[in-house]
Image (cartoon, rainbow, N blue to C red; front, side):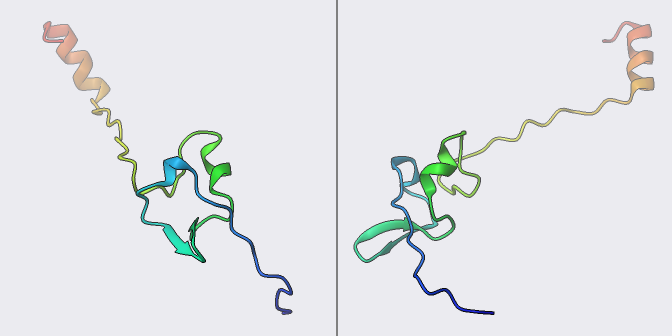
Length: 77
C-alpha cells in the first residue's frame, strides 16, 4: 500500500469543541484528534464524540401488557 504523498490538514475546532478531551494543540492551533473537520460534525446537531456534553438517556419503564390490563381492571391505573 502506497503512503500518502501529502500530509492531511486538520481544520480548526469550533467554539462548542472547547473542553472536549479530543482537542489537541498542534503547531499552535487547536485541532480535533478524531475528525479532520470538526465544524462539519456540529452542523446537524451535536458531535457524537464530544466529551464536554452531558447526554441524558430517556429510559421508559417497560410494563407487561397483561399486568397493565389487570391493573386497569382493578382500577389501580
